[in-house]
Amino acid sequence: MKHHTRVAVSCISPVVLACAFLLIVGPLWGQTGSGDSKSAQKFSASSIQIEPTDPGDVRMPPEFRMAIYENLITQIEKTGKFQHVYRSGDKDAASAPDLVTLHTTARAFNKGSQKKREVTTVTGSTSMTLNVRITDHAGQPLVDRDVQGKVRFMGENLRATYDFSKKVAHIVRDTTF
Amino acid sequence: MSIQNPRVNVSVAMNSFRSARPRIWARALFLLAIGAPLMFSPTPARGQASPTPQAAPSVVQTDVKLVIGGEKVKNNSVGTLSVVGSSLQFATGKAKVEVEASAIQDISTNEDSRQDITGAAHFATMAIPYGGGRALALFSHQVDVLTLQFKDANGGFHGAIFVLPQGQGAPFKKQLVAMGAKASVPLAEPPPTDK
Image (cartoon, rainbow over all chains, first blue to last red):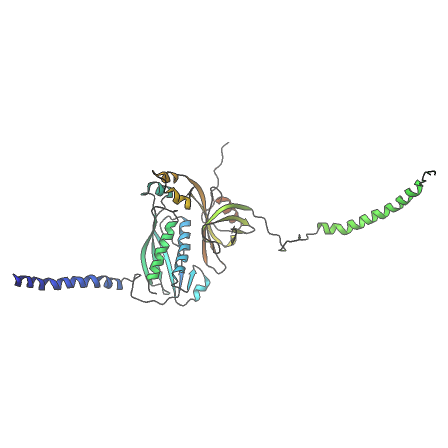
């Protein structure tokens, strides 16, 4: 009986160790090749330029696009990650040697209703999904992912743009440029 | 003691008055000749700082909320929006934002609704039992949302969002477009009224 137990333990223990190893190393291995925000690659960038939101095929009101743009500038300045945060079209950005550019493209948008949210709690949420792309000077993407902004319970509809911008600022903060 | 009646030579007095009359007329004409050009010349009033007088605002609206996009003015500030000269001005008690009409790349108006009870009072309504706070959330009012896209002197792209009382966004858009601002969506003409 004891012999059987020893054999079982000796067979199972390498499998368990292998599984544990894969669990630890697997996610890290997957991230290195993705070019995502948690990429191990390092880019040198001291300035960023924010481009206005491209509505794409989505019908997004202009006030939401402008609110996204202005909130992004504010939130990325707050990260302190860059020496300069340039607006789109700024002439000074052309002379910045290590400039990265942030592009946002709308993927989905639902305006919702503040009144519905506050009366029913479960309906009327405002949500938006935008593709966030940060490219280097050569146009190579450093970050490319979809980010969602929403307001579910309280607050005005435009608050979804603030939520989105905060999430983008987190991505920028976590990315090694 | 006798009281004598004073004799007044009326003819002499009349003659002296008649002789003085031409002199008075001459003086009046002289003063008029000097004063008239001064009266009609465009002399700046005392205390007027600038040599060119500032144009009176053509469209003015108080209690306007700047949601976002004021460089010097804090977000969600309430102030006065006006079209002065060839620019749009938003002024609060402390600061002022000015955008030249020619720098506006796009201007649009939209309708939205806002809750009547906001701020700290809104949080207080949440404490009302039996869903009373939810019932109060039904009270809202329509507003106009004015969105501007403009460029600064350095070419930098900016956006600004203003919330105005209902129906007050269109006059601003109309005035700014007339002064050279661009609008991707033309201002809708009001429907004809049948009499």
